[in-house]
Length: 264
Image (cartoon, rainbow, N blue to C red; front, side, top):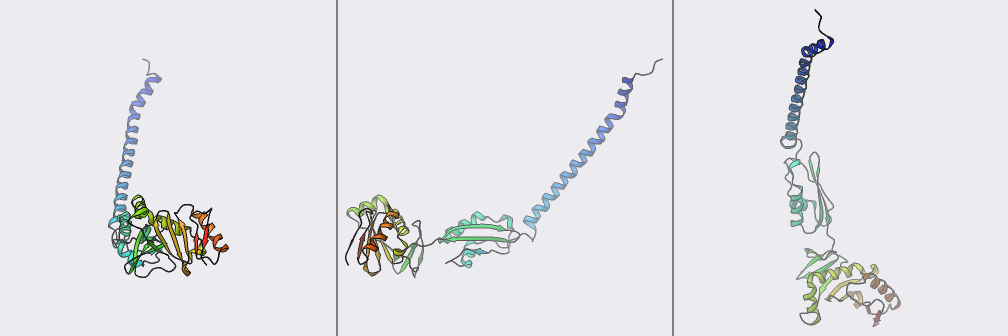
């Protein structure tokens, strides 16, 4: 009787040895997957505890930088950072909103987590370019025309903003058309274009209407500037005109291509 063929012996060997090996490899792979999953769960739990439950990653200090007029204590008080709480859970957007709301002098603020124990507050304050007199105090106005702070003593070398807006005639029409806020922005625009040498002697920027803005200088001198348009050209013309007519008391650069001076 003939024995089994080579093909039959191969099939028998595969049946006797193949499936157990596959099953053993499958069990090892399953155990590895389970171990890795458990490790991931443990690692996640430890991470959550470190961030939220441990005493190591909590807010202990709130450094403040960039202040000029404000004090670091004022900024910290307004920020109301939850000292002692988990650093990861601090709402930096809420802190920024509180600072902007409580301290209008702040133009920009950067709230940064400083691991492992700090929340840093870097502020940029608004800088006044004009001051508006209100009763016995002065309201500071920045380069965007925003009124942001009231002080009892005006900053040195900052011109006064005078709104001489009539309730009738062209001034009233200009006020209705542009609004007080726009007119203040025009005054700020003019203040930014005044030549440096003239700016040092400028005491006030007076606004009668959108296209009737003038400067009051020391020594009783005045400058008719007109609107805020063509500021750079007007600045160059004023510089040249004041050199050519150094004894004049009134200068008109409202039309920079046709300047005029008068008085002595």
